[in-house]
Image (cartoon, rainbow, N blue to C red):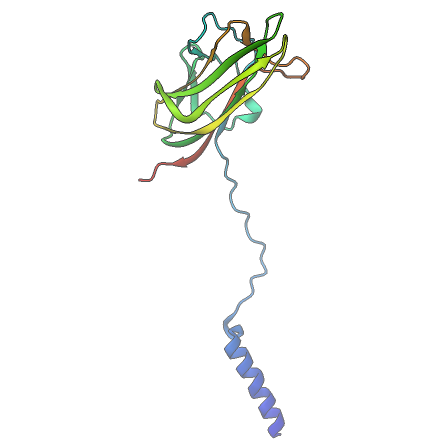
Length: 194
């Protein structure tokens, strides 16, 4: 009898000290967490872009919003589609995109191409790119840019490019099913600390 009592005491002590005495196991299926949608917007320039002057900044005019890659309307195209205005949001936006320089000249050109992002008319930090290359005739290339900007309600964003030769244009590679001359993607990543 003493052995049974000792065994029962040990079991009781184990249960009490392990915390199992007050544990309730919930066997219900938990509700899934609500899905969150990261607001993004994708713009393309399908048509070729030509510069009428050299060493001058030119706005890229966006001629397509990609609905399958745009989640909500925190933006509006304005200024004849040269600017993207921010609506209903103040915070940090990731900007990333590319342009496709094309040598439309009959021979090689070694020229510099530049791209930058403006926020309310001021060049954004770390959203500039430049490249000097020997571009063969009918040669296409890609320049990628990526960074972040601080935006406020009504802020306007422009993407601009510059070339040293008007024979360098922006043109999508027609080998692809959906060639683009330029693209830009906005992704809201954070509200400002308050």
